[in-house]
Image 1: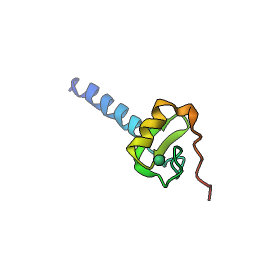
Image 2: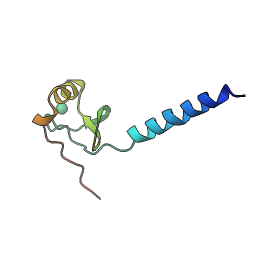
Image 3: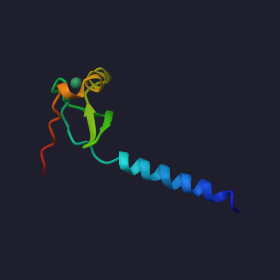
Length: 76
Ligand SMILES: [Zn+2]
């Protein structure tokens, strides 16, 4: 019975991590070249998930995030 506790704790921690990383992306346009971004290409910034149009842009941004401005989605 005692052996179950660490497993339960671990499950809770990983669930929390998933929720913290989830949520909608903060942008809908690729910050690198301005094309329509897709959710499958994303990284997690302090401000939230940032999405890109392709893996190349994602890499470019990740190498030098300060070069690009993430344009937030227009609020509804
Ligand atoms: Zn792009």
